[in-house]
Length: 223
Image (cartoon, rainbow, N blue to C red; front, side, top):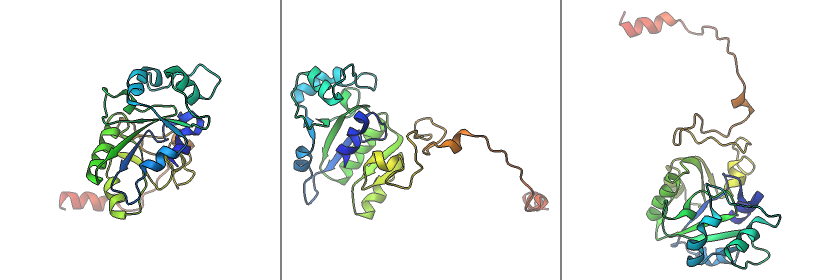
């Protein structure tokens, strides 16, 4: 699901997955399955030497008519399968020292492996704090207690068992349909909603009195 989401429109939608945090205690480890999907994992040396080519001011640099993931692979000197949709980077840190841990508006997806739920929560908190607070979090889980815990993270949209692109923008979940997503006061926005035409029009309200105002005034004054 995440690969389908991240490869949509070359991964340029900010609501698509930016990072995958995998709990390694899962009964059926997801890591081997991820490696079989339509993605190519960059080596440690390639990740370090090519960060500037993959990421620059939040956007991947195109300049070619070929598929963007193929063009990026060409630039950093790696050969990828023809069915490759996403370039994957397995990381261990979040922050300026790890450029690929930033939000990347392109077909580059970072991966983290954590030992347990607590470590996964902390890693997600770090990722959100590094430029993603108030945006979107996807949870793939059937345990309501785990969902409740993870839902405390500072994201305006928590989508469950669905790609964040399709859930966050209102297709597979009942969020308002929009590609313009507010991030709330977490990151300095005035709204945490999916922004729709209703946010862009002026509404005049003519309001009649429905309860006597004197009763509230008198109660407040102790009269």
